[in-house]
Amino acid sequence: MHDGMQRMLPVTIESWPRSQWDKRDAPMTPERPKLTIPPDLGLTLSVVPTSERAQLGLEDGLSGVLIISMLGGSDAAERGMMDGDVILRVQDRPMTTPIDVQEAVRAVRSDHRPFVMMLVLPKVRKTPGPTWVTIRLPQGP
Image (tube, rainbow, N blue to C red):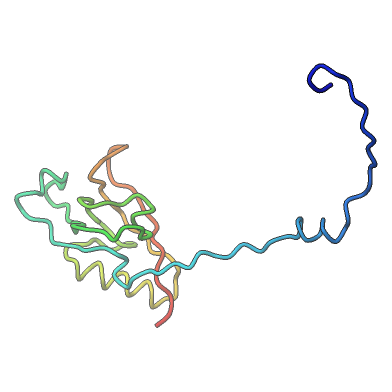
């Protein structure tokens, strides 16, 4: 039916040419994303100012390193870390200075591990307490 009138059209059914089918339906190998991970993991760190310890949730005896800025699109940012978070531990070592973080990351990297674990006290808490975050490490020398 077209515009209220019945019309007859001849139709010939044929197989789709296999060569065109193979071209359109050929399996594709997805390319792996090329990640550029800076040696500092895209984190700018600072010692936690004494005046901000209570505000950041660092009770007496708890130490950590403050993230003051972060490279956008970095693995740490993609995994939920943000400015104002506090890194409490890297792997099993407590952190007190930015140099501690750098040395701990360097030690994990020298073991040729692809990731490092950080215990982070988030600035914005979805759950009480710190959370473990896995960060991808740069590979190579």
